[in-house]
Image 1 (cartoon, rainbow, N blue to C red):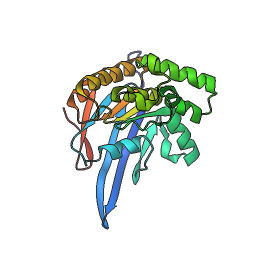
Image 2: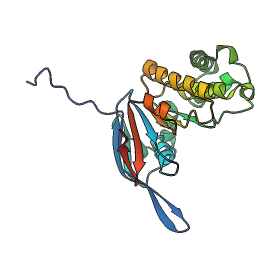
Image 3: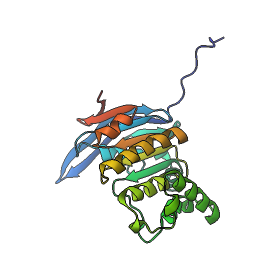
Image 4: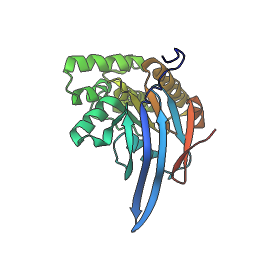
Length: 235
C-alpha cells in the first residue's frame, strides 16, 4: 500500500510541449519560438516580460488558440486542444479562455453591459441569464453605476474594467492579458493590477499577463521572458 503521505502528481492545467513558431519575412524564415516547454497549475499567475519583438504576443495568441504553432502541443487538463476541429476549438476558446488586450476591443455602439454579455450570447445563453451574469461581474469590477453607459462615454480605466468583465463573464479557466494597463495612467493601472490579483484569488483562474510594467509583473508568482526563442525565468 502506498504511504498516505505520497500523492499522485496532479495534471497541470496547461502543458506546453515542444512549441515552435516561425514567420517568413521577404522569403527568410524567422524563428520566434523554439521548442518551448512549460506548465502552469490551476490558479497560478505568470508575467511574460521583455522588449518588443521577442515573441510575447505570439506566445499568448497560441496559448489562447487564436494562432496555431508550427509544431508542438498545448494541453488543457490533458486535452490536446489543437486536435479539436475548428468548431469545437472555437467553443472551447469561448468557454475556457478570457482575453484582455491593451486597446480593449469593445463594441463602441453598445453599452457596458451589452459588451460584457457578448461571450454568453455566443455560447447561446438566454438573454435574461446573460444579463444577470454580466451585471454580476460588472458590479464586482466596480461599474455598478455604469451598466447602461455607452462604452465611448467611459474613461480608459472604466473601459478596461468592461473588457475585464467581458473576459470573465463565463468564469473561464484561464485569463490571458496583453499589456492590460498599457494605455492607463498610474492610478488606473494600479487599480487594474489590484483587481486582477483579487479576481485571480476569488475565481481561481490561471492568469498569464504580457507586460512592460514591472510593478504589475511583481504581483505574479512567476516571471519569464523569451530569449532566443526559448522561455526562461527572470528571477
